Length: 321
Ligand code: NAD
Image (cartoon, rainbow, N blue to C red; front, side):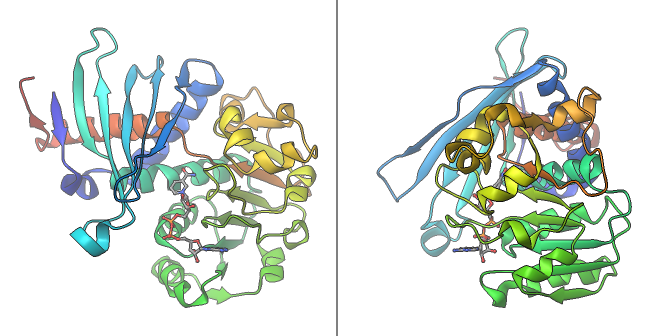
């Protein structure tokens, strides 16, 4: 088996490789060549940790495995490690033998950024000029950097619940050579593309904060009870997701479905747009909404890609197991 340690990932994995891996696996999910296993997430009763597994099998990419890990809230203070910790394990689908163990922390950030980026490629208007960010935490910087590669953006606007964090995303805009402007939430109407990536349990983006024609990628809601946007926005939008079952149970669509504003059948797989079996955006006035809940197959896809890169560069550690 090969081991690719966390410390090697930054030098190996590119945004392009993450984008390609995630786009391919979304397509495979929609054509039923790949499926995710039910997610396990447990409060283990030690260190206030949440620990779990996300796994799946992609028959098209021949990727089988799981990501194990979770959230240890005391890590940084007590041990000097980041609070989110994960490791990805890959198995040979022909034999069941373990084939790789890969650091999953940076890969999680890159695969999540790739998901909103893939949604922008396939659903945003081609003439999108203003990029809007709601959220300015750890993950927001990754989402913005990847998003800016998808269209000829001319400006970035941003809002965050904690305004003192806005310089995090302003820095990314400036690095990309774009002006940045902090706005109030109703100023988001100027944006052609919006990404929300916050940990809120109460919606901050209301339906009238989003103008007709906008593409919005909602990336923060990955747990029951979390909610970033008013449910009424989903009723006004054409809704896409990575995985419908997750979208209606732990994603942004959980609230609109529970309130009877939309049905599960109104939520479409982004992979179907990639495959050409769903038409995607049909007019310049349509609001498209991507509910990115985060699936195990995304993790496996980027891990498989990074193992290939590590082997090619001679930095994968080979272990006889
Ligand atoms: P972070 O802690 O670095 O940032 C949290 C963000 O949420 C900040 O912008 C903060 O200001 C904002 N926020 C906090 N409380 C808020 C409130 N009450 N109202 C509005 N905004 C509030 O976290 P992160 O690593 O950037 O992750 C952000 C979210 O994305 C988390 O909910 C995380 O679980 C989720 N996430 C989703 C995926 C996925 O695949 N969909 C992957 C990784 C992370």
